[in-house]
Image 1 (cartoon, rainbow, N blue to C red):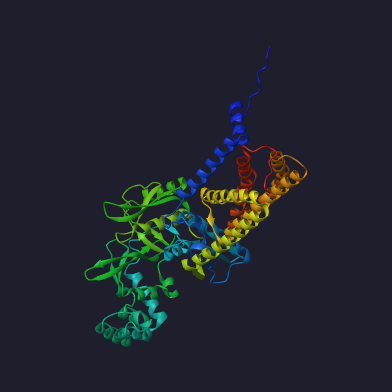
Image 2: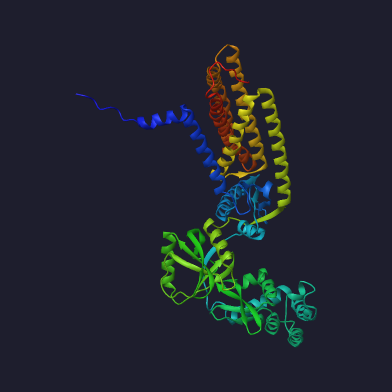
Length: 565
């Protein structure tokens, strides 16, 4: 009884074909032609609109250099808290930039408080800065329709009079004639008749804060009622005054409990004037963007406006459903970074999906940027740009020109030295070196690597290693020829004896490149990538291509014919 043959991982036909490809001269030539075709195809396929064969880094094509810092105006964060915060900020910023599509960004922490961000090839700097620094804190709040009634508004007016004083408010009212020259000039706007009557009333009732507040009405006189219950309309020229009043601590304490006044983002035209909405919302959000799982932007064809569709997690969807079912008929404010994006009415139970209306005048690109930062998540703390530097394309072009000149000079020196010292063998090595250059460029294009100045240095270093491998091989061949071996035998023995030394040196250098890539950042990784690809290309060039060229030259010659080396 015969036992079945053990299974083979590689079929005999495939193994035979592989040996034929690498052992016979025709197979070697076909293999080289295929590799050249693939490398050339990768270069052509990845050529961009600017005509560059490879993606260029910040130092070659220009871009932005930003230094970011976590804001801590109160100085209450400990060093450990700062380190944790900047680590979380780094993760979110990295996610945003990856979705933004910047090639090979450099994102690196510096100490426990700062972070460096380098973006190569960025054309819209303001858009990039907005994506990096935008807080993107999303909240869902209920509009309180009757919390800011007349009693609450009178209490706010009284708090303003108590905080600023009658004389200060009266002076702000008289400054209308010189509006626009100082910050104080725009804090309070009313016509001269109203200002005079308010001043007279305030003078007559200076002993009573309540009477002065009723006469001046510094805050409530700026408000008009909006279309949505619980909202006010403020003339755009009065918005600075209203914001100044709402920023007073006394005013914040005078607001009803669980009330937050927050501004809308869109301007509302009424007649010839433009107004900004002021919403009365609950102080606490019933749901935040932490439960958001996905967001996408599109154009609403019905209302011709940009919208952002969002999708909540399962837990967030259940909470949204419970809240909307209990508040049918009320208005839901969608708040982003403290500003109300929209406040739709709740007509029915809402599940895990919703949308943010961006307004008719908002470009679709802005909606896409918002969807991007919402998907990446909100920053755990506000960050500020403490250093900003732009690298112009002219500087990058100068670097490219200098790198090209250095590479050409170095390559010519190598070519002259190899041909002058090794003669015909040097010519064959130069031919293999041309294959090497094409292979390394095609390899970088295939993995979508970015070329930087350190990367150019890595290429030049790997060229030296390719030449070094050829020198080892040629010296071994010389030794075999001096020992009286036939030319074909000397070539075979020279390649075989030099193989172990070439493999050892390439493997150790390749391990170094992998370690640099794993633990390095930015320019270090760029150097490691090009050096690693160059090592593999130089190994194939020296061992396979150079020997193939030798075999082509020796074809048809007698084994005893001498070779120029």
